[in-house]
Length: 200
Image 1 (spheres, one colour):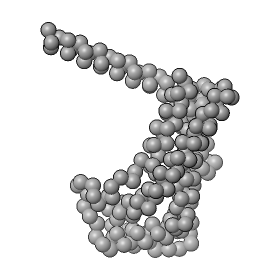
Image 2 (tube, one colour):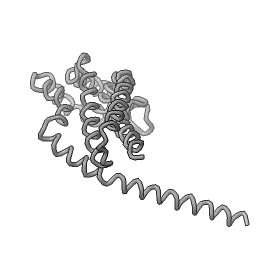
Image 3 (cartoon, helix red, strand yellow):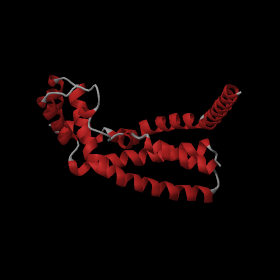
Image 4 (cartoon, helix red, strand yellow):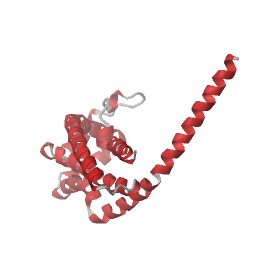
């Protein structure tokens, strides 16, 4: 049971990765979202193009997925107290295959994700702010800052604290899942009882 829960949990965690969870319709198609001006969109796309060169985007996204996966794996092994080496090998093989398949999907979404990022920048920042950001990103330091912004999660100082956080959250997951199961059973029992009363 623990092995099945671990597999399902890691899969769910991968799906909550921002890089995988987004990529639906473009921002401007969403209801209630105001379309930014052409100038703001142009500035935002300039920022994205300079900050995330097309030939490096895949590595940036894949690196984030790999880092998140490694930390969730570590936390899951601790949280579910899985020590059987054979079971761990099976799960690692499954995880490697799942991540590989996920990256195939992610690769297809990267262009739309980048376009969505540009439109988001255009919606969030003012024209002056976009102009300032574009000027910064045009510098070598600005380009390096943008390229390495996602790498911060793998830097040891951040990664160590983040691993502790994930471990603590993961440790409470079995109890939380048991609580959810209890609530769901109670709901279904109550619903069945209510239905039986209405029929009588």
